[in-house]
Length: 568
Image (cartoon, rainbow, N blue to C red):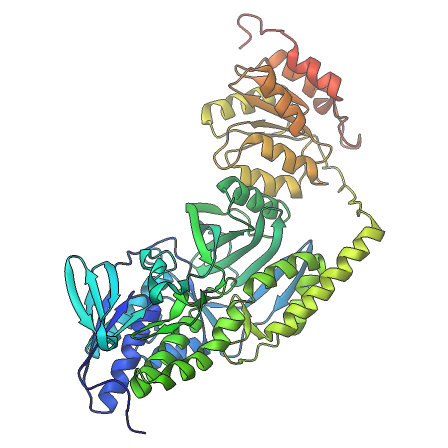
């Protein structure tokens, strides 16, 4: 087939040198070279490295597409083979097998998976003749004959076509495609690298609706005791405490691996669905990659790579002819249409509650389908409309059934074999002081410096009492009190909050959160000993500690006894 599109020697600008932009340049220059033509492709790269970027998920189809563009993923890039996906929802779980050909996660301590793929694709594009400029594009103006005038870093140039492969937060968004473009909607999220040296399985986890504020949490192993954790908010009000509380609940319930430690946590944004445009194309301009559409629950890059290579082929063969818009619109439509269904997926999965995991597992058969399939973290291409319909009706039945069943009562686990007191304080001096004093009082005591560690152990071996500081590293002690009081394992545990503050409002807030008593620092050890006396005297078969009632707790917190001089 002869090339009938771009003129020989045409100049094309690509705004954004991420995976989509670099793939477009490499694909276009490959076609140009194959037909003995010439073209100048300039990529404008103002995208700094982002360690908070999600790892890249690579199935066989994506790896083959990258290899065809000259970006081969080898062992030097340290990909990690994943064994499966566990979907959790409302206390139930289901396993989804990896797709045929396997699935890899790609990320290193030094560079994110996205940066690794970007570098490989850029090297391939440069080898084919592309030019990369570290410059920010300031404006794009249409000119006569369909040309585009591009200004960047004080430099003005003319191009026959400008390709938008920028991120959704680009300042160009308002004027892109002559005002007919709106970037895909964005959700607030919270992302952290995770160190989990005692966790060695290769199982990903997707937790649907773990808390009212969190839509989903994705846990992606990266190998060598590392993982990536992403919490996606329901709306624009997501804060760090929402993510920390959700993680704490999942650790408490054994959903996430134990003994994990968060590294470089912070807010981020994830795109949600498709951009809204009258057309993805205008004379001399077209839109590709995440600027056009994205898959919320799939950080895989196949949709971006697919749209880039399709657009490059059609631009080369059809150029700016009228047929180009029609053909490219048809080929892009499946990606855009199914990306627009992403928000409905998570909404329906939340409503389906405990029925969602098994339903998704039953619909996923692991076979590779076309790019319009709804992929869950790279596992299983689901028929999008069928999946959404089944989730909707399942959620409706679950909601109606729950109205008639009423709340389910959870039985408390058996008591631990011996009286036990836990101490949680991130101040080593205060922690050692409490631990030493409790041991001297005949208590069996265990100390923790991390709220995550305490939550995990308390769920498996419930203590008789927990003494916890109100100010902690990741969450406040009042939130922790609520989490402990909600769980059946620690529902009857005596909770004692301690704080440097001594206001009446602080004590009332602690009691309201579920604490049985509140002590300001320095701690009155006489009152603390009196409160813990039932725990110390309890034998192995005495059953659970009797928690103080609210009046007793208030009295204990308000008494003014002081330590006698020389108590220590």
